[in-house]
Length: 315
Ligand SMILES: [Zn+2]
Image (cartoon, rainbow, N blue to C red; front, top):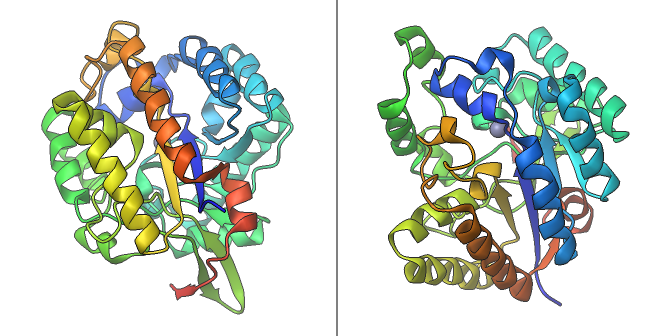
């Protein structure tokens, strides 16, 4: 029996990258769903893989996006909640504002896709205790917002170097990608205990066992840009170490892992957007082949149901 691993995609849309980056024009909510979703669903179909899509509420209220979101659900993929406005600082919200954001996203996601989300991922990994309490009170079964890496502050520095943000905006994002101490957290599922015998499953965005460097697809593409060979070596080493340490992994994807600057010129600033999309597709399929020969690949909901990792962590 192969070890369990889950795959999810944060369905961050074109506008959310532009918004976080401080680019004008995001207010009309430009979307690349037409270029990304049908093609991506075909790729998943061809390899018979079902994954979890974390959907942003704001996208689900716009008519131009609805047919694509319905298509994801129709193809049997799990739909989970990725907040309403995709603010990457929801840990700074009041509890009421946070609840309102999560529940309004849930309402519109349910009405468009027919699925009541039971999983949540905070944009920009901006999680906290209030978030878990709200999720538990509203019948969510898992959270997927933690990113146990030591390199969060470095990633943030890189991001700030290219973004056009005011001091106030930077202040709000000062915890984007998390602090150094995130690296000490577990990379394999566990439960958060929030007190009063309330708990919720955590399925972290896995990182390299022990080293805690990222292994999500965007990072793998970033490495492939320097050398494909070393990227595969890096990935295979992470897999080997995950087996030695008996870890169950969860891999994170983004639309930009398959899109290119030639199809979405507004996002040319994003790392790896200069790789042609055909090349990205080829690398993507190869990575998935490696993953599926080593793991029993499932969506997040199934990972939550099948995992035997039941350690309890206090918050
Ligand atoms: Zn996101």
